Length: 103
Image (cartoon, rainbow, N blue to C red):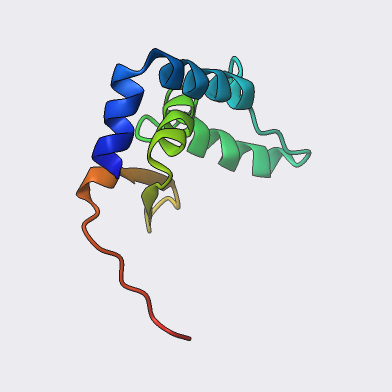
């Protein structure tokens, strides 16, 4: 399905236009997160502007790829020394199976 989704996005101008319109509608010229508490805002800014995360650059692509593939997976890691949180994007092409545990 992922291969078919990418093929349709890549080859069909209408599909590409619809995905891009949806991306612009959701993200526009960028998003920001603001907190009233200065300490919380500092944590948000550290996450948002971290070179690995680069949310200003990556968020529109994440939105576009979610619209194309219908799924996303992020590995989240926290540095135990300074507490910084980083996202690691895992490409849907690399997901071969999903295991779940019954609760």
